[in-house]
Image (cartoon, rainbow, N blue to C red):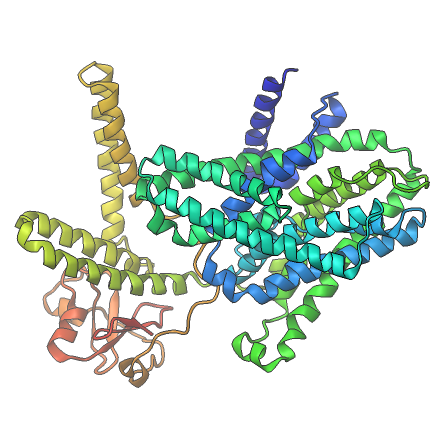
Amino acid sequence: MTAYAEVVLLVAIVVVVSALARRIGVLAPIALVLVGLAISLAVPWQVQISETFVLVGVLPPLLYVAALQMSVPAFRFNLRPILLLAVGLVAFTMLAVGLVLHLLLPALPLSLCFAFGAVVAPPDAVAATAVARRIGLPRRVVTILEGESLLNDATALVLFRVTAAAAAGAAAGPWHIAGEFVRAAGGGVLVGLAGALVAGLLHRRTTDPLLANALSLLTPFAVALAAEAIHASAVVAVVVTGLYLGHRLVTLQPAASRLQTQAFWSLASFLLEGAVFLLVGLQLADVVRNLDTPTGTVVALTAAVVGTVIATRVLWLFPATYLTRLVPSVRRRDPAPPLAGPAVIAWAGMRGVVTLATALALPPVLAAGPYPRDLLIWLAFATIVATLVIHGTTLPAVARRLRLPPDDPTEDLLAEAAVQHQASEAARRRLEELAPDVPPEVAARLHQLTELRSNRVWERLGDTQETPSQAYARVRLAMLGAEREVFRRARDQGRIAEEVMAGAQYAMDLEESMLLPRGAPPERAPAVPDAPATCAHLRAHPAGPDPVDVAGCADCRALDRTDWVHLRRCLTCGHVACCDSSPLRHAQAHFAGTGHPVIRSAEPGESWRWCWPHHLLG
């Protein structure tokens, strides 16, 4: 089979298996590993991969896209637990696995055992966050898992480099290890910042979406190569560049470039992640065939290594979570979470890309013992598969059993509604400034569009009949379908050129993407919101008990109308009126006529308040 055919076949398998995994509810990395193993056992298909391919060709883009999507405020707030996992836990796992392996295989030098411990120490971001998002874990748990995976690779690779060099006979005292860390981490930060500044400058000067996309593709590889050239951590450099650019991307790229870049990286990361896990499975049969160690020894060593990897994470998480909060300043800033949170994080220890790459970089036999390099590679691969299967298949059940509550989507909607209201007010003020130069009918259309965007979020808070925004989206989608059909017929009949069809189709596609409901909660909001804003009005008007026996909007009923959407109760006089999405907007009219400042939602299950004068949510 030619290399070209192999690539096409790999991509096809990734797509088909991932689609089937989603349909039957199985985690895609697990399915790909198992399918790869089955193929390797059934067909003599040898696909050779090297550590250079993984570390230079796969890891930088995966880390870059993850860093681009990471919330910098959330990352900064959770930096302490992230570092405890990404540095402390990786070092602890390396030491524990190394000691266990040396105890079972005394012929292997301790430094080589520690090098193997560094191989299996870092969990994989892809598998853990895929499970976390699918089962709806709290946003802070997801943020800690993602942040850990962004930094633990650098820790593991530095530890592996130092211990592997020590196994080869190089000096590796405490000062040498500390110096390697400083050089790797400090150099990586400097290279990452320099790469971010250069890439940011180029993005500001690039308006063509295709060129911006190409620049985004080159950035992680260029930064990684620059870091490797000075023997700094390419992982840290890529992560720093991605965090910097992701936080400022809205000011660096025009909208068209951002849309195209996001679509490109979604596809690239999907294919790269899938290919890596499929290749793990394809390598396993060859690794097994190369083993010449007695089966009983292999089984005992595999159970010991996998058990130690799982146990060290559990043993580290709880002291790291609760003992650090004995410090008063830490406890005040971040109170101790319930036990369910650390327990779920402790059980999210799937291994993946970095373990694969560093396992392939293990040095040959460095001692006269009977245990070859292939045995260590098998143990690393077995750890990947075992943790994927054990943790990946049981984590949803563990989260359900612990009753870890997911984030309340209503809180996100309330926060979004408050900020959208402020954004709409800013848009209206800007429209008023430009109104003298705008035809009245255009100004009216723009004002209506602003109202629609502002009301759409508030409407999603209720679960009553179809709201005006939902009706608008439903009808407009049908209208777009009719428009597309007319353009398609005109193109087929030769009345318009293909370029005309493509331009009209692009405009309709953009409009449709704005109308379709979002299928998932926001992924990159800050993990811990800022302290809620308040004012004297909100403090003076507590929510009180839930409203009961709400007959409807009193003002609408007086006019013999029942077409309100949602209801609001005035917390000064108790008057119930309709919301801003309703045709007559009696709640706002009540405030304008009485000056009563605070309303509360009168919808079942909602207790949020709104201060009219200050535009604040309570």
